[in-house]
Length: 135
Image 1: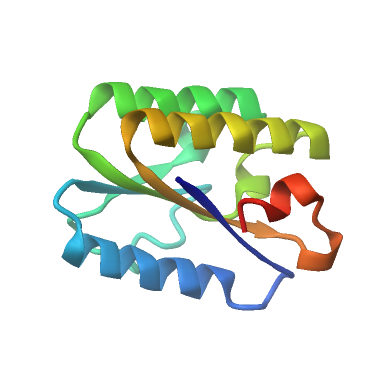
Image 2: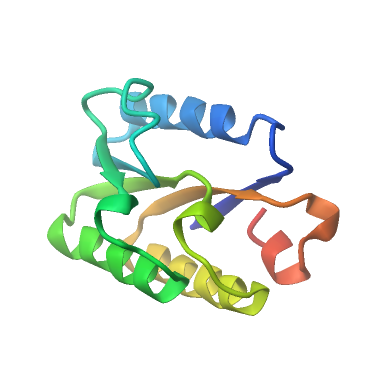
């Protein structure tokens, strides 16, 4: 299952995500992955969490990011939770491409029984119905 945390810049989305990361590492039996563009949260997460810096992989669009997610799951079948901070800083594309990515990522989560949460800097009232379905 995929969950999107919506909100404008400065509304505490990352703090909410990091709180969820810490709760998951304590309660989940599988591995927890935190994906971010850059290393700015390296000191904010436990050493038990696999931190992935997408800037090291030249991810440019939603298709490439979907490939990265698939690779993470193919490499490690014990992943139980994936957290993504600020999807639009990691990948670029149109609103339609974002919607298509969210649908594919949700299907990937369901297939491999993985929970995923990501932040999206967008006011809830400005989000499309397809995006709101994941909020």
